[in-house]
Image (cartoon, rainbow, N blue to C red; front, side, top):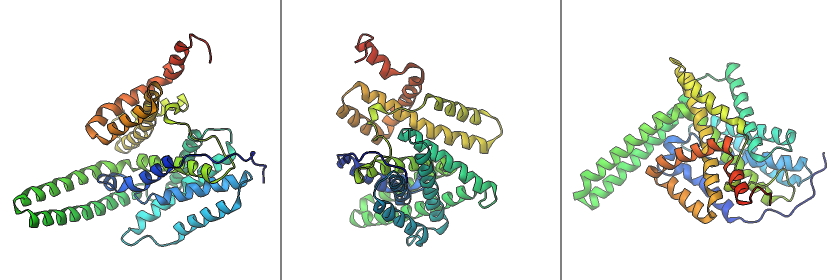
Length: 346
């Protein structure tokens, strides 16, 4: 086993991690989440990712017990039957994706120790995608099978949600007869909105799966560095320092090109997924530049309000994407810092 790095104090600060954990586990269940996110049982993504971090940490000289415990929990997710009411095909795809991403991420962490987290995560997700494509090419999975599974899962979730909305409308009608018509109309409209969202989300499941996997890997990385004193890489940087390789701008170009190719519906769907995934990364980069300019409290508050208020998101997200993409050539943070220091490094 290779020698590990010198043990360091555990990363401090649990409240942000707890909030992030709550968001990963609970946000997929809020209205709109089950209709658009392919994996709502996000533990099947988080537990294997944390197991991969613990195994890499053990390889670097850390505690074997963390690796054994989290690997055992991952094995339990693999072998145990799905929870009651969960479709077998959906659960198999979800936990299969979680295990493939975790394994690929672990391999990347062992091979590319000098790479920052975001590079490892993107390489891991890319490798997992290639492995999944290999499963399709070998005939073990039909090309459109996953989309049909998630479309069916969305339909079942929407049916359950509509049924619950109708029950709520009936309860309101019994308590307030004058509001009966309005309550039933609201329930009907919400059901139609969820069905429409699912119709758009089903073909774009690759982008959603990749983004959920990235969130799970980031949280697992942060959790591991608070559970262990062995470092398998640098801690996650704050949002205002978030960046990545400028070469990824070509992924956006490729996505746009695939969309513009005429009479290629399947290719257009892939291009849209590519744009959504990398567009989200560039939006985060743009929000990071925004946070760099102002105080952290103001940045976090304003971004949270913009994301929570959907109409504001229609304005702020494209703005953030544009700011993030322009940073490829302008490097806003370095340029402003250079001007503030009069061309001298601090």
